[in-house]
Length: 391
Image 1 (cartoon, rainbow, N blue to C red):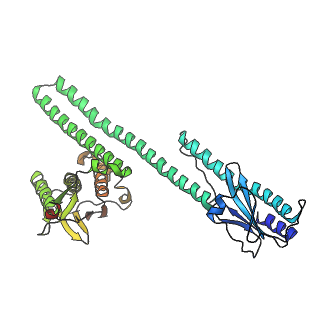
Image 2 (tube, rainbow, N blue to C red):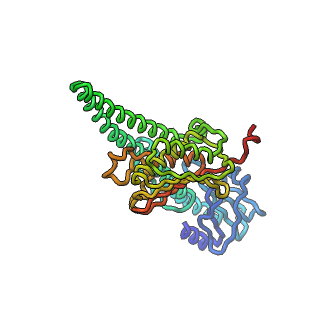
């Protein structure tokens, strides 16, 4: 297009500039500074028009779907008084040819983008526009491809979740079947033993289903902001008191664990879902217990840092290998796989903790060193109002 403009300008001695519909300069005679059309003049441009004392001509460049751009020509000599072959006619002919080039340049990326969107909507989730990263259409193509990547990742995660849930359900269900068969064919004492084992498997199934449902509801809320209120039961509560309550319950349930509880004397108010945050702390304490030796110290702590309430759980257990640490928040991922069946759990604990933190506008971070223990830090924004203000 630049070369065509240069040839036309050399042949006619006129100054020429081509603009896209949004005013972007596409090509121009070197050294020229022709004005862009104001929006009101561009909106009314349906045929060639002269302005600026009749020395400048604006020519619309049309494509199949409407106005694609326009050309500006500055005349060096007055136009001839009678119609015929003139400088303006030559310029208009050149601009007409250039309009075809411009239309092709704009329409081809649009056709590719529309075709890609249609294929993606029809189920081909691997298709991408792949437009060159130039101009507004290139930006639009890149944004579409990034959106397609995110949708593809969500679908992959959904399929992976379904496969993992199916796998995790299979083992306890199989143990339940065996336990019930043995209970039916054995004496009363053996039957009671098998039924107690079946009760443990049912508790594990119930916990896993509850974790999956809670995780899914928080994921849905993160995708649809208007549903956040359905995922969280917000209230103003003292996070320090919640830490003391959770640590005390854990100490009572697991008397062989050595737990230390550290909280500030003053209240640490958070506007959030107390039940979900208690569940997050329960998961962290349970992980600390599972991956520590009996009687090993475990610490739960509540502090403040800036505008955040900081809740921490520390243990001196086996730690997590650095290779595994980036994956610990992935659903169904478990470290120390040889102990999985002994320690229990299906690898959703830290995933749920992360979702709970995110739903509260907070973060969760993990630091671990093999053989020396793990620290998990949960940061939640502090309440911007006090209970008396809320009342």
